[in-house]
Picture 1 (tube, rainbow, N blue to C red):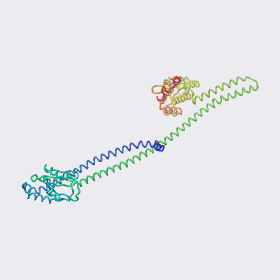
Picture 2: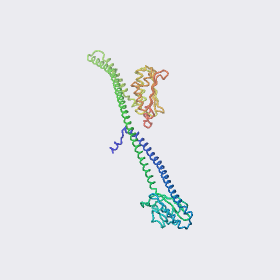
Picture 3: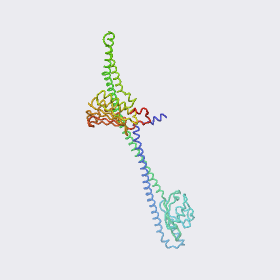
Picture 4: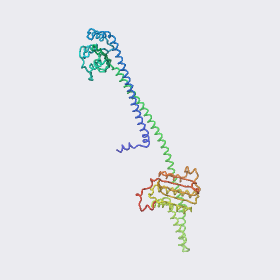
Length: 476
């Protein structure tokens, strides 16, 4: 079972080829079926028309035979009385001599069913055949006499061939000598017509099969082309994906190195220097205590203050790496703490506004919006030269939107369109991972500056039942 599932587990390239090949195969199969049906229908109509033409030619031939024979002895029949036996014998003799081809002959039956003339099957003469039927049960002689009584006509039936004695399809034309009560006629076997029709049908089947072969060859060629194109496209896309993956990996490494460098600088420039000052203060206090001279409280107090500063700096770095308020209190309090720390550190006038969500954000959305705010405030601090910053986070019917605006120098148009900075790229990628939208507007407000709006869709807002009632008031 596991082997079967592994076989059925298709790769992306195989799925792509399958998606392209299956509709092609179905379309070709439908076209092939339609071509076959239409070809057979058209050929059948042509074959039926050919059969009708051949049979009609046979009928005209029979009618001509009977007309010529009748013209040959009509002067005898026309002047003879109904009971003129001598005239009857003379006409019967003439008809017995009129044989043609390999199988053709004339026959005569009286209305009672007695055979009077049958030159190729003489054993039938002077015998009553009114009840004679062919192998299909059709009363042949009775039908011929009935047609003759009505004047003349054609009748199709089975009849033994004089040359072989085997039954074959035959068309008979019969006419009447009413004063003598004779049914006179001749017939022609149409097995050659049936053979021609059968050969035509076989030829149609051969052409249909040949058409199927052509369609199959074209289908195979098209499938090979589809698979070849799919493989080429897959190889190209894989190369592009590998290149993008390498580029993304390099960007991750660059971001990691940048973050490590920032933490290293903060540790070296801040905490390291503060701790060195604490050490000097503690050394000075120890020396004074050992000598028993001077005031040891002053350097000790200075060391304690520096140690408190170091503790505060460690907390700030820790909060920048992963704010505890984000997990404990929610996005609103975490952003508020971030904004207050930014205002304290930079001296920039900062406003923060929020609306408590009825549905809180999920973890991915909280982290993404917090990092976007952190990145935006860092950019404002480094590049904007702003004196006023406003941060607003609120929910709405489409989801949640974080809006950060300042009155600084703004972004140039090229940088805004292409987002060449790592910080801007990080913001864009974080929002795209959430299927959200990021807008960066420069010079949009009355005081100029930059506006950054990050919107996450409603799918990242958790329903109320998944939020604890005691915590909902504190979470945003």
